[in-house]
Image (cartoon, rainbow, N blue to C red; front, top):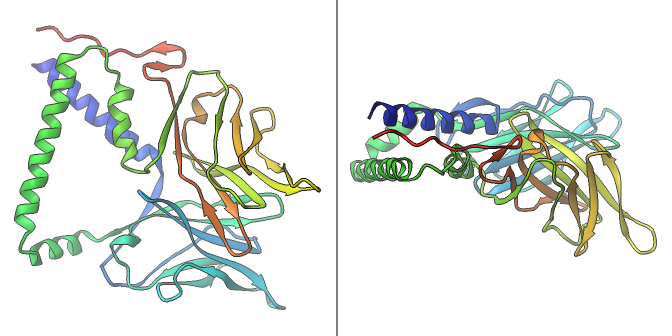
Length: 307
């Protein structure tokens, strides 16, 4: 029994740690309906955009560019002018959210575009203040029923987890942690053995410029940016963070990312973005992980517990 409790504590500890390792972000709290300004730590760029990331994926909120003699920033694209705005601060652009609601919660980050690629800033996690949540719960007559349902769901989940640990010695910690990771970002899973090559397809088409990005504990980075050129409008890479490790291939009027010799640092989430005249449209994220039970060439197995 002691070994079982220890194993469960280890599992839940690893799951919580993995959730934190997805995105390192600063927390900003706000009451429902209030306005909030999120600052960007990217400067010295003539074009700055803001993005939101939640379970629905990634979307561009605002894109602003410097114009006129004094190089003030003006919004070129705004997904909702009644709800979002920009403000200049320290040669950069802050995002103003007017009347924060439930759909505004999640992760935000800015990106500064230069001649070759886009540099991304530190993530900000936006959430309601604890007191606001409590007040909302107290004012809701169905709160107690909801709490009971949540508790029962948690108990059922715990019992299922105990059953899995007790009845199978071949489940790996990686396999048990993976469902929790999917709660952060809804993504398709692609598995690969260490050292193998893999091609990740992009579902964004009809764009003359397509970029591919990676998200992991270090944040967001642009891997490759490709643009159509020539008579036949073939895609050619304008920017590649590591030409010996990444490449592109054309597929269905789009660009796919080729990772050569997948290693530990390649694991995480990938997504593509197609840039048009007004903004960037993002594709569905893909989660890249090693094949179940394989990590660094070793098979991970949870040892059987003694009766």
